[in-house]
Image (tube, rainbow, N blue to C red; front, top):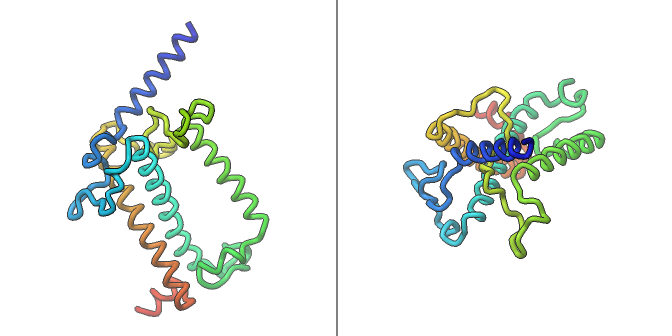
Length: 205
């Protein structure tokens, strides 16, 4: 009876996940395709990739986009509060790209443990276990896993409608793409002249 209940629960969870799963067999219907560029793939990566590879591409894009959004916020907030007691007791100063070597060593141990725990959870939720992988097919995502869906929604923002979910996914992808460009621009600008982004903004007003 318990086995039947567990199997039924897993089946329902898989069905619920698949209801929001993009159709990777038809890449031109995936979330993230908007005017005026439409389906933008100048290097033809999608045409060369099978469905599991496309899912990994989307997982990577979402992950990098989320990290970039945090990085952009970190650039601006870090530079805004630098030199204040809010940031490691006023011990960190200067442009954001110079903050990393100024951060106390114990912070990096804490950060590494936190990131390791989060990545382990992500791997357990989304990836096929190593012992179950086919030979020559490393890094496969589970069929029931929707790329980027880590089950983290403390504010209950995830829509219950598949179409609304795709619209929200598109907004996240677009913001993530913009953030990746912005973070790269921030890094390049500060590397060129050694001035912080906040300093640039205030000096141009």
